[in-house]
Length: 387
Image: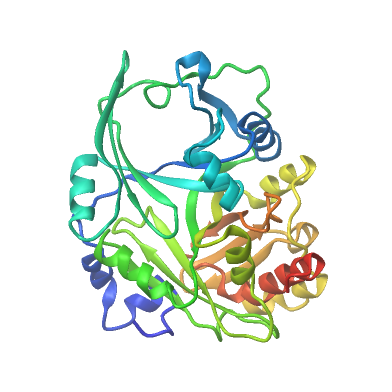
C-alpha cells in the first residue's frame, strides 16, 4: 500500500477502495470488541487506587485469596465500556514475577470479545499464531465462559473471550468488588486504539501477522519523513479488523540523529510491548480538566502551537482558548477533525502512557500533531538523559 495513504478517505479514493479494505479484513475472525486489558503490576491494590482516583474508574470485580485464588490477586476496574484488570503475584517466583522483573508494570493481555473462542484459536493458530493456551471452559454459578489465547509481539498476548453463556460480574473466579471509594468518572467511553512498539525492521512482520493470522487490513501508513523531528524518527502502520472496532497501530524505530521514544521504550521495556492505550471521550475539555484536577500530568504543548492552528485545521466547535489552556492538540482529515492529548508516562519506567482522544468525524490518528507531540516527548527524554 503506498505511503501517501494516511486515512480511510485516502483509501477510498484509491484503486483499493473501501470494499478492498473490508475484503482484506477477512471474516474468519469476527471480533465484537475489546473485552479487557490486563496489566501486570507490582502492587495491584495501590495501582487500582491510582486508576480510580486519577482516571475515574469504578470498582467492578476482585479475585484473590478470599475467592480461592492462591497465586495472584486481580482488581477489575470499569468506566463505560473500558475494563482494566490489574494483577499482582502473591508468591515468589513464577511467570508474573519474571515478567515484572523484566518489563516493569506493563500491559500483558489485550483480551478480545468473540462469539466462538475455540474457532478463534483454531483459525489463528492454523495460520501461524503461537498458542498461549488452548480453549478452556471456566464456570461458576453464573454460567460459563470459553477462553483461549495466542501470542502477539514480544510477550503480549491476545485472549479470546466467549461470554455469551455467562452473566456474572466479570469472569468465573471473580466476585463483586464492593468499595465505598468510587470517585466520579471523567467521561472515558471506550478504547479507541492500542499502540504497540516493536524492534528495528519488525513493523512489517507484525503487520503481516495481523493481516494473515487475524484477518486485519492496513488502513494507514506513516513513513519516517511523516513522523520525525530535528532529532528523532519512527515509522508506523495501523491495522484494523473488518468492523473497525479493533485498531492496532504498530511502531518501529527509524534512523535519526538521536534516540527516538521507540528506542527508549525498547531499552527500558526490554523488547516489544504495548506503548499506550488511546481512550475515547465525548468531551475532551471536561475529561482533561477533571484529570488535571486529580493530579494527572500531561505532555507540555508550547503556546506557539496554537498561533496558526485554526489556519491549518479550519473551523472547530470548541473554544480555542480552552484547548490552549489544557494543551489539547487538534488535527483534521477529510472526514472531520479530532482532539487529543497524551499523559506523561504513568509508570516509573518510561514505557506506557495514556492518550485521550475525541473524534469529531476524523478517522485518522493526528498526523498533523506528530511533530509537536514528539518534540514534547523529546523534552521529557532530555530530562531523563535518554535522548
